[in-house]
Length: 200
Image 1 (tube, rainbow, N blue to C red):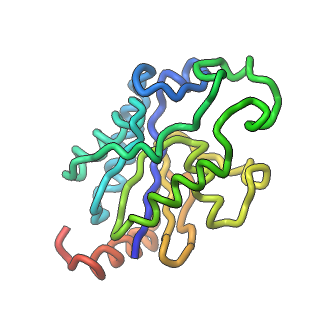
Image 2: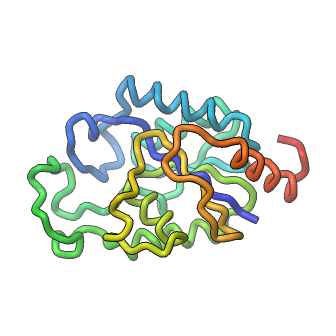
Image 3: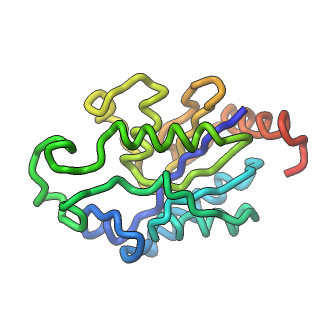
């Protein structure tokens, strides 16, 4: 009875500088990114959450820290929800990357993203917040929508937005939203209470 709450990190220096990077350190959140993370944390605060996991990349860890301090649960690092492997194009401006497939560019494959998220999802019980990155979140959601990489191109996961997947029912409850509907909040809290009782 697990539900994954996928949160993309807030705006970081990578977004402002329009580069891709999988480096664990550097490229922190901007002031706007910290503000975005605080808003996401407030939106998530009514939810009864069991764990908060974060990518080891700095911008994700900073976002998770803000959410964790608001909710009152310590976060832990989960390497399997890390940023995409960029290969030789790590730390490259987007406009300098050739218009080729990820395989041709030597980047981490679509299937690799899905494999590592599937492993994490198999361990989720209750409500887990997973703070990750745009492409990995898109790949994870697409597993439940039956979409391949090209078919999912229109899924836009903006900074500090929330996507929710009911793993047990294999159902996507929301995608890239800044707000959680009453329905989604109700499902999340009912899921927690069914397993752990009504105590937050």
